[in-house]
Image (tube, rainbow, N blue to C red; front, side):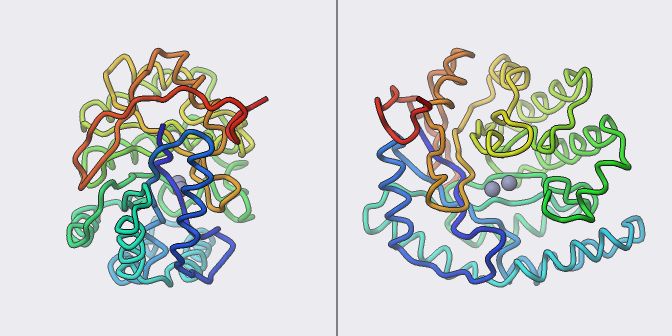
Amino acid sequence: MLDYHLHLWPHSERETPLRIEQLAAYCARAQEAGVAELALTEHLFRFRQADALLGGFWDDERVPAALAESMARYWRFHATADLDAYVRCAQEAKAAGLPVVIGLEVDYYEGRMDRVADLLAGYPFDVLLGSVHWVGSWRFDDLDDPVSLAEWSTRQVDASWDAYTEAMEELAASSACDVLAHPDLIKVAGHVPDAPGEWWDRIAEAAAASGMAAEVSSAGWRKPIGEQYPSAGLLERFVARGVPLTTASDAHRLEHVADRADDLRAVLDAVGAAELQGYRARVPHPVAVAPAVTGGIGASG
Ligand SMILES: [Zn+2]
Ligand SMILES: [Zn+2]
């Protein structure tokens, strides 16, 4: 079992301390849940290097002013840490024998993924997650931001799923990342089309064509949608197309590390998935889904 999606800092915190003790605590908690390896995957947009490269991407005449201003505020709040220091800290954790690999959660930036890939090529990453958290400059999953949240009442659900899926297709085709994170994140607020099959088909097809893996994440259980990412229908499509899988908590704090690992095992069991995919230096290798730990912290009771 893996926890291949972990953050060091909650979105509400601007301070970005880097301590190897925090990583050791993450590893200890994961081990209790039978999770053997962790990937540190902080958001690329938390780093000043991303700001230098991508800052201002929302300055586009197609973006409504309120969304552009919201994105600018969000970006300014987040893009303060140093990517070199982050990578160094992860390398130290590895050298100390902690079962971690070095990664990032990389967002999709329309028309800019070549530049993103060039920046990331200079670092010793093991795995890169590809995510879509916004379409245009609408942060559809930022349910704490009134401007972003209000968009859900003015947009059609089908059109939102369509725009999200198009971004996922372009992200997959860019070959910039290894794993599609929370592949049906667009359902986060609870809005799902009556017949989501056509969008599930497109997302699964995009993953299969790109050779990327797909993440199975417990984070959706902590959101209004109240189910894992991806939905069973999308997970079945991934498996049918031979798309490799990772497992993840998307924790932003210690208490969520390896969250509901046993429930994720049950989700994998239901589709007959006995193998996950790990990464070293962005080269994949198979990892067994180990049996559940009785009474572990991931137990659902
Ligand atoms: Zn994410
Ligand atoms: Zn994340």
